[in-house]
Image (cartoon, helix red, strand yellow):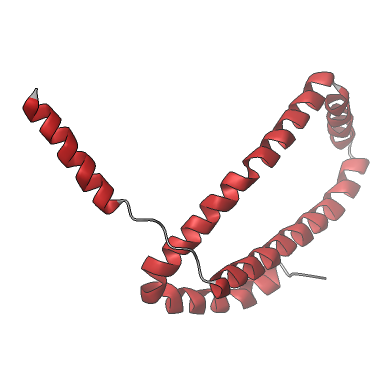
Length: 141
């Protein structure tokens, strides 16, 4: 019994030594991340709008597309689907602070532990892939 207690205390002390607080990310890193995230979401929205603009005319002209459109409209009107959408949107808004804290913790850990070693290489890789993304998924038309 004493040996088990001593082992548990030793493990707890060793875990506490390794459990350092995660450093806060640099302001410059957060601004860079937010800028890259905003540009990426703009790319996604632009690609989605192009996709919808290309698919809607095809769906209107085919009978299968009309059937799919009617099925989606019927599903949206069902009370269970409406309540599920409300629950999921409420859950998303409740989890937003947790996701933000996790994101800032990861940025802080990256900035403190990894950025000195791989930061320049990652920055070069991001800058090299931007021209490719500009041709495939441009930010704006």
